[in-house]
Structures are given as C-alpha cells and as structure tokens.
Amino acid sequence: MGLEFDYVNAWTKFIEGDPTTTGRAATANVISHLQWPVPKRLESSLESTMTKLAQLRNEVDAHDFFVLTTDAPTVEVLAYTVIQYFPGLDPAAQAVDDALLPLAGRTSDPDVSTCVTALGPATRILDRAKTPGRSLLRRAVPATTIRWVQPIPQLPDPLTAVLTTFIPKRADESFAAPLVDQFALGLVLNPDSQ
Image (cartoon, rainbow, N blue to C red; front, side):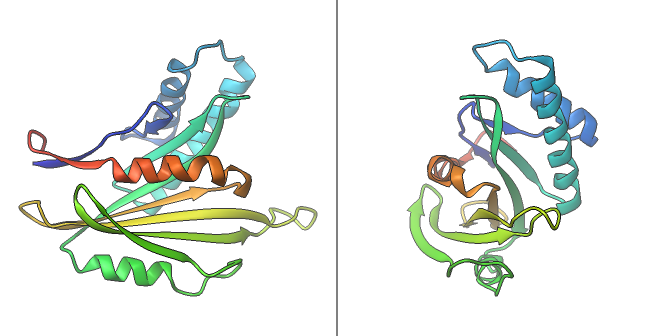
C-alpha cells in the first residue's frame, strides 16, 4: 500500500536526478502537453526556471516536488509544491504550529481551515506575505503560500504528509489556489503500490 497523487497535466512531477536533467525533463513534460509550438527562446527560459526549481528541491530535501504551469497566454510557472513525509501522526500538530509562527513580511493572519479528505481530517493554511524585492529599485512582491497537513493513519507505518505550495505572484492566487487544493485533495492510497 502506498501513496500517490491524482493530478491533471497542468502539474509536472519532478524526476530524481541532478538539477539540469530534472529541469530538462520537466520542461519536456510541459511542452508535450501544449497544443502549439513553443519558440526556442521561451523553451530556454522555461528550462532555466525549471532547473532553478530543481535546485530548490534539492536544497529543501523534498520527497516529492510538483510544478503548476499554465499555457495561456504563454507558458508560465504559477506555483510549485514541496512535499515532505514525516513518520508518525504527531508531526501534524507541529507542522501546523510551524506555519503559524510569526513571519517577516506577513500581510495578514494565516487563514486556517480543516476538512475531511479521502485520507481523513486535514488542515489547510493560507498565508500571504510580501517577499523582499531583488534589488533596491524593485518593490516587494506579494506572494501566497498554501500548506496542507495530512495525517495518514491507514498506512502500516502511519505518517504525516506536508504539502507546501508557493504561488510567487499574488495575481495568480485566484486561479492557482483552487488547483492547489484539488491537487492536495488528490492524495490517495493505492493498495497496489509500494
């Protein structure tokens, strides 16, 4: 019995490997779902972004990593999700507490809600903050983080899944957030997988 995600083509799961190989594979996956030819310049820019995200995945030691993209009006990364699994069910409370700690740049109190998923009760935390500008001449950018904390007691060795999604541009939140929630709710047990 194992975990798997039921997700749509807008999400790309990163393969294992070095950042360059992973970025190239993720770019190829995104392009394979497009209905129009991608200019080389856009493909190169997307591959650069995917390679940077693959480096981030390695830095945060994510167990799984997914990227949400859109293809209208152009190919663009809307969000990325870091997934970590922790042994036991106790880490669920700690993950929620960690998400509620004071955060520099936070623009409002986190919005915490719970719901019952296919795996049982889960907690969703929506947090908005401003990320610092990259230089003195650039303004801070409003960004959104959505964290889902899902205890999974049905496994032989129970664990807690923590899905942390970053939506770098607040303007993308209204479109991306429902897809992030749908993705999180798509975590299911597969009795045939390991």
